[in-house]
Length: 345
Image (cartoon, rainbow, N blue to C red; front, side, top):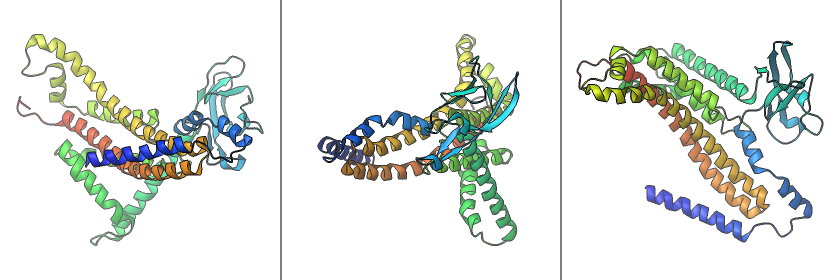
């Protein structure tokens, strides 16, 4: 299966490169088109999508941009709130406003260049609020369904969500945490659906890269890190600081390794989700940009087919990454809270 998938992928990209070589540009391209192609900055477009911003571009033009609220705090001026629209002129070029300037998505005082405390509603914060609101709306509807259909078969959105909840409970949380799984099930379900909804929303046109933001994935991993180490029992800490069955001299080597392992677990959670989601967005945007770079209908058609294929894979990745993050979180918590009756465990 892997070999067949690899051959299919190589054939698709081989076809793409052949098309790029054969049709680098349409024969009727004008000088204006050539200048437009030269001014088309692929890296800027991709980075603008995957990174956070104080404005939200849905499509080109003034009416396709949502200017988000800026909330800044300084010791000298206190809290100030205004629209990010003030940082842009009619040509959409950055300009200072009211003693503040926006550079590389960071706000500074214009005179001193000192960074301010930025509490703004950025694109990713807005996506976070949308994601959280959607979670509340969906699960409030599911809760109403349980009350309405008590003792009867579920229907509507309840029938869609319930199998996923049972899967997370029976296939992820319960096997890895053990008898005390019910204590951690609400957190695990919240974690799974937050990541799943965030991944799926991020695939919508114009959406922000919420779960591909390092700060978001680091926060989620930090919650798992806190729960794991706060709820860790005596056996868990004993295996870290006084590993049973190990000669005394080797404990000098094993102890720093075990301590480092405490922090590498949440770091791996952070990086895995961040890289997987961000890389997928970069690949999709790179393929879409090929049509604008080469200005060829053929290239646009072929790249669109590949984008469609990869987008279907990204839908699968959205679920897989939510599953993997929840699985490893359950595993880490289960290892920290498990009862060790025998030394060989």
